Length: 215
Image (cartoon, rainbow, N blue to C red; front, side, top):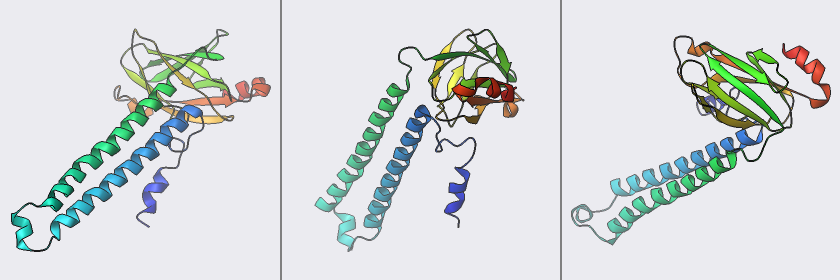
């Protein structure tokens, strides 16, 4: 029962392990790899601890032998090996997450205390709702007007800072039409907890109805 409680918390509109796009899928995969690596290291640590606590004889505690040396080298090599694999995989995921080329759609996102403005290539803008076509890559050019914020759509992509005077680009893609919740992931003041917005991914063949529903 207690083991299932943390798993229940992993499900929801802001879950990073319930991806709805290719970028978020890579983040979720990295999360699972890191979880596996941490479990492997935990097993190693407790195994070595068990071996140290239950060695036979007083002589073993007084004089180091080959067994002790082997345990020491294993305790050094295993964490280095596991962490090296995780580091290489994380760098590979980060490299693949960088935008390459030009996306089909571009959105300008501007953060401020405590809201979001989204402007589109046709000149229209929306407040608190970002409208994007489903199944198409979208580049979001992110900036801010006051303090540093951070745009985070957990089910679609990782975080990207919104910095005054600077534009950062994040590429997202929704695999299916729907509403995806998003938050500011950088503390920005007393209204930070309510600094949220919604991504409305619409079917490209039903644009008019989807835009009307998102208003």
